[in-house]
Length: 313
Image (cartoon, rainbow, N blue to C red):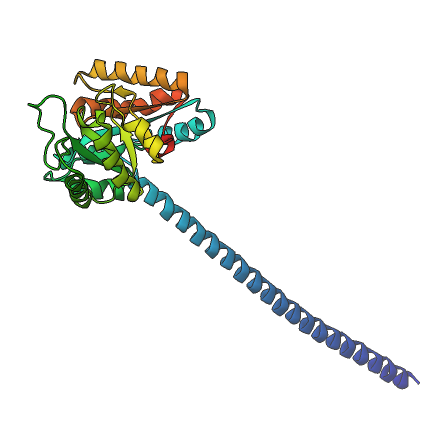
């Protein structure tokens, strides 16, 4: 009986051990499966995470590339940050607008290069048949500046030479048309015209009607430089349906810095009084120096410097 009992107990014990072994084996298999699934999930998560990070890196790289490109495009002077802020501000708060034309361009390339560094638009009025006329016009176009033909015209002073390509009151209609065509072909990228000298021609309604008809045919606007108070150019342009404007202030009849700054203040006051004003300056060193300063000064007065096209009537 005792032997049978021990055999029975031994069988039970073996069964328990076997069951424990089976349980341990099954538990190990479950853990392996969990680990495999967990690793798969982790791998997938890592893959997704790496993909997101990669995209973020690419986005950051693109942003950096764009940012670096902007820095390279900006001038070494960090003032461009301030100018950008002021540009956004003045668009919202501007009470008046001014446009600036720089006449007599084409003699020197270096002056044009300095103008290209301005943080606001100016119109570049190029004289025809000068050593750098075409190069300056191309440079201005590439930098987003408005290009005008600075059309030479006969002045009242017979001793003053308006230069090659000038229009004279002694010319007939055919001669005037040919002269205008030659000037236009010599200065590329023009969208408008203003007169160089011309105090005699711009007072002559007949001659000006021929000139303006040619400009209208080519869809060019005319800015009257107002070298004489008796000019009919602005009024006649409006009557003939050309887009037009007229000069209000000459910035640098005197090439003195203080005088030029004073003229800028006069320009500002005129703009605030009437809503807009147009100035003409010349490629003098002191003029360029003042122009580099006035953007922030005028912005503080809620005056915005705009393209000449924005002030056409």
